[in-house]
Image (cartoon, rainbow, N blue to C red; front, side, top):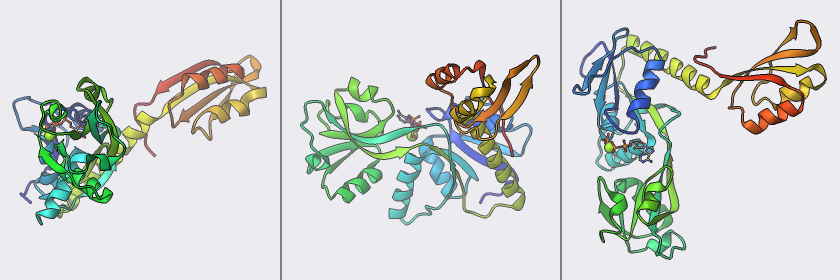
Length: 299
Ligand code: ATP
Ligand code: MG
């Protein structure tokens, strides 16, 4: 590894993961300012450098030990891992955890007029993709022969342009497929963003910093998934009300001044509180219901 006392973290320069990757690190207390023209952003308050690169480069930078950490879509990570394994290049890294953004799926899709029964309908046909390794793995598992059409971009226009019969591409809402006269047939891989670490020897100082960042990421994600709930509950329905609060096993119950029939309930809920639960709470006599976001959580 190129010697540096500073922890290097690779994130996507610009694209679907870049804003949320930066936001996550900022929420972990890493202070930095990004200059759009520059590859590196130095943190002001911690020995951390951010490398802003194309997302395709991130797994390789981590696997080669050029950087210590990377934030990347699992789809790109897995694609690169298979690619490197077939080329006998270093393909190891530690997936520290899945993150709570970048959700998408890699799917097969065909033109609306295509009569599709199952993946074997694609036998012998040409499939356009930017993920040839993930596609090959799936088709091999299904025992289906097909022909490749490798495209780095504009995969969704390939059938209409007469380049391929079907595609294998990333989907989140399906709107792009629909706009291009395609429909989704098989989900071949589900992906989220994740944070990965190089397996190459870290100094203990760097490892301690990685542990600290990871523990803060855990806290940030837990907080984002949780809500602080306050309400007033009649004594008679208290137990039923508490049972309705998702994941709030041990709420704080406090007396209300000048009202011995009701109590105040404060609870951290591990899920969002949906409108229908709010309506059920009200039906049980709960009032003054407040649901608030939590900024940080630890311990
Ligand atoms: P780069 O210029 O860095 O190579 P890119 O064009 O390859 O960027 P983006 O389109 O920014 O990549 O997507 C980055 C990642 O975001 C994807 O690999 C995937 O993990 C995730 N993602 C989430 N939703 C979608 C979606 N609807 N389409 C594509 N990628 C998505
Ligand atoms: Mg890319």
